[in-house]
Length: 344
Length: 165
Image (tube, rainbow over all chains, first blue to last red; front, side, top):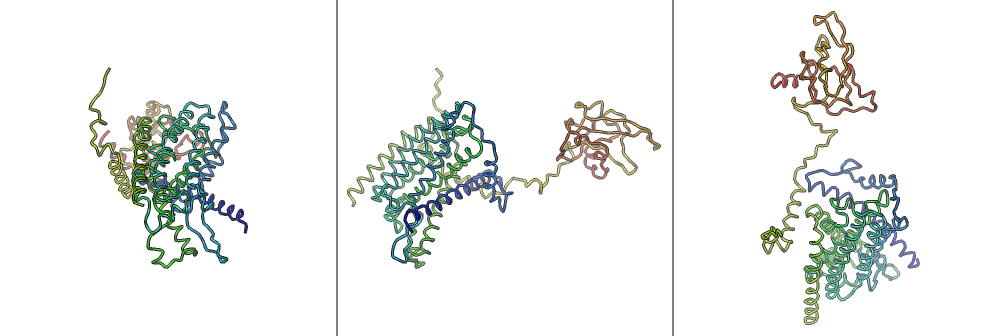
């Protein structure tokens, strides 16, 4: 099997996993928010309401696709595509498990694009392209609220991109590589980056919330002020794509945080205790389970925080980004650099 | 210029200004809430049973020997939404009068209960029905077939009226 076909298959699997995860997240979001508010949440469609996302998507498909009269039609059409494409393409550098040793001795890496030596940079670059989808959506709708939402999101993403990058730099200094597989390998045996980089993890976490436009940083779609923000003028499946992109972004952000700070698929002692050999199928499944477990914890945190904290005011958001997270990130780099330089 | 000092933000302690401990407190609270009993009522299966004081759909009291209504037309006169139409007729029974036609347009009814208040015979009362559904305007006009309800089912309301009216 040629490597191209293999990559395509892996890509298709990753894509479907992401979409299923996004659907599951929509369900979980509604269920958890209901529990936090003394409600029950969707429980009618299918067992425990598990088919609710399916019903939602069916509804979105059958809805009328309205384009405002004065909208810039090509950009109005392309904006949600950019959002979802960026959100999904980030997945290719994420390594949910190490590798499978085939009979002829070759290693079958589980990641779609394994051992990319700029994996982390790829993630940072693509996640900032995501802002184009939102800005274009806001601008092409020809609606003042959409435009304000788009502008806010560009300002917010640019501000928090910096803090995120700085936090990632410190983590990379500890791990010594930008390659996702290498980063995980450097954290093996429980030497997770979060123990060495608690501040960096915190900065990265907060910046991830801002990058994915999640509460308390969901200013681009602040309902009370901006109607729906950038997606006010979207309906039907175009709106659905934005919705999907938000949850896919959450998933990828959690996966990157798991890779960068929580040791990826690493779980100390347990594989050796269970006698799982590296490269065997049980080991790969175990690693997948560990990775999914860690990602789920972070995803739960995303939802949990959204239904706990009120939205930041715009000036508070900028203050936090530029006057708190950025200096902290810089200090974190200096301290990490000094320790790495003198200790190693 | 009106400058406010000593605002809430300035009175915050160091730990409060750090945000994180307070955020952790908030998260702990919402996490606890997740396991508390839910307030939702699963409506079609779990129905709410109103008290006697509830003003639901107005109905006519049906006694063992026929309806109580004597077709005096007071309810029709008092109805602010002009929802009630009564046509009187003669009967062999002791009270001599009965409604040949008694219709309430449920699209007009505002559930004010004035008909019940004005009725000298306690013949029209507000029931406990709150899920009133129809598919057309014609269906919304309830005739005697739908309005007459046996007195046994209206006891609670009648007692309430005797006590508080």
